[in-house]
Amino acid sequence: MVEKTTGKKMTPEEIPLDDPKTFELLNRAENVGVFQVESPGMRRTCAIFDLKGIGDLIALIALYRPGPMDLIDEYVKRKKGKSQFSYEHPLLEKISAETFGVLIYQEQVMAAARVLAGYSLGQADLLRRAMGKKKPEEMAKQRETFVLGCAKTNEIPRSQAVRIFELLEKFAGYGFNKSHSAAYAVLSCQTAYLKANYPTEYMASLLSHELDNTDKIALFTAEAQNMGIVIQPPSVNSSENKFTVQPNRILFGLGAIKNVGGACVESILEARKVGGKFVSVEDFCSRVDYKAMNKKAVESLIRCGAFDEMSPNRAWLATKVEGALALAASASRDKERGQGTLFGLMEEAETGGKKSAEVAPKDFPDWPKREKLKAEKELLGFYVTGHPADEFEADLRAFRTLNLGEPDEMQSGTVARLAGVVTAMEVRLTQKDKKPYARVMLEDKTGRMEVMIFPDLYREAGTSLKVGAPLVVGGSVDTDAEERVRLRTSECVTLEAAIAKWVTHVYLVPTQEDLAGGKMSQIKEIVESHAGDVPVRLELEVEGKKVLMEAGAQMRIRPTLAGIGKLREVLGGERVKLAVQAIEVPKPKWQTRRAQAMNS
Image (tube, rainbow, N blue to C red):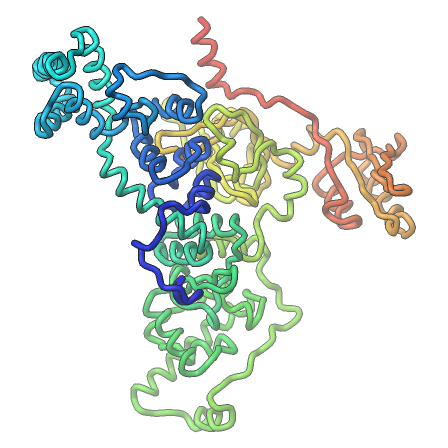
């Protein structure tokens, strides 16, 4: 793909292992899609590791495993000169200087046995294996052999030799094979290089590799968008089977759309190659091999937006599918029998086989935006024409202390308030007392997270907890063994309830034109129709300076989603702001109980 877009030929062997941009990318923890270092925990470690070159990457991969992970903080401190250390024997400096006195490779343990105690390569390997298996009888024999070898080879006193052996024994249990780690690191470096230097081509290749994995598609499209790469929605007239590259853009591949099989995609591409672009659903169904497609495939293409250039009214397009397929089926049967209609022959003669595009009736209702977005997410793995949180975003932003797409900040134990829209929900019963609780997928425009709504909160939330509902939740971040981030909730309210409960002021930012026109009288009417106790403040610009004015007591508001929405319709979304009471999020009950148990 790089060769196709840039003309530059390249083999993996030619990728440099010392490219500065590669290590800048890794140190920024932008590792999604980079071999071996893309997990959330590995990204957090990269952010503190200060990688300078391939050697650091080899060490990182060897350290980031159960056991050696305990050494990472000390290793980083030594690496950055924040922790002093010494070597148990001067000869160990030559062996472990590159890893700042921490023996993280099996080869280092073997080298120490050879240099200090005169072991042969074979004997050193036997020692490594014995230390790994931790058999007491074998270790006792090896300890004595090592101590005698140290005395004979380097005149090392017994007490010091025993300390060195215990040090080697400790690290041998953690040790990783350096040659193995180096092989991983080379692949990590190569993939990071491609992502840093050819980001559009690399992300398009990753996406193409995961055509059948909607979860990976969602992850990689989000990463591409975070990198500033535009993901173009699929099109039956432009997309190929896989993801393709345009300048700073990636065009979604037809092969990644759910319910659209490989045979259907091949037939679409062949029909387009022979007859050019499709102009209508009927044209599409008549030209694509009838045997290669079905109603579900065509409807899926429409629902995800692949026909939008023909008409943005997807509901209207969907009504045409059944009739278009019936005609296509009839034409296919006639063709198999070697027959054709006089009308069909006349039409082909007049139009060259092309049908003109039709326009949806102006009064034909399209699907609601929420339904369109749901279909896009289901079929593509990401939202194309917007986000479910769009209509509530200005209000949700006022309540959240963290974005859902900020995993670096969401370390286990972090107390946070999150705000987003419920995009999926599963209700379960507790094992012990069979009380209902919910697992909710909460999304904002930056990311998503699974949120646990426990029985007490679930009972309080009631019927308001449903897919599509804007929600404000608070609690403690919890990271499981697989590093999946969840929120254990201690508060859970709808956006409507949060506005009523925590908004302290409503700020309006009118322009000079708003003040001179009739908008202020409209605002007065809205406030009066939602009269309450919350002060309204005007943020004005007078002679180049910002001036804050509080409206009189008769202009106080009872903030609601509907009322705030009407104000935004008059002034514009960004000119109506909510001030929210600063509340410390209470700890979840399970944390409080644990703290009490520990104190007692």
